[in-house]
Image (cartoon, rainbow, N blue to C red; front, side, top):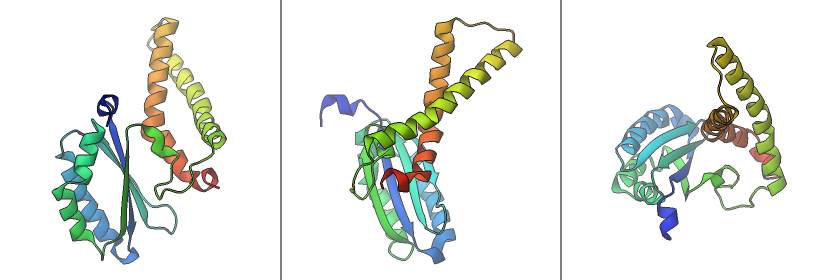
Length: 185
């Protein structure tokens, strides 16, 4: 692994197929697993994307300070012990992938075809356009309420920081999941 990638954050996506009769037990098990994630070196955050519709496929997005920290967790004895507790009666399948960027938004976990670039662009633009408009409007309104004027540069810096934060932590994971069939068709 090159030196540059060791300085980038590690983002792991874990997908669990859960047996329907054990969904509530899985939720309890997942709480214990999240507690274990938090104790792992380099841990930053965890997001659980719960199933939508009739499928029982959970996606867990883990963020670590480096890709090495993420891989250390994924191959740790603690994680293997947790998986042993849950397999095979609780989990039908456990798959994961680690990236050092947000490329996982558009890549299928099972190694299938990647989404077409024009679809990635269209989906991202469809989120950026309304968000950038709303964020600018809300920021302007908030600043006028407190009677504060910012330079154009500072206004744009704050707007873009808020936009990036919302895109990475909420908007793109949600929208990509909802549009996954279209993205990969």
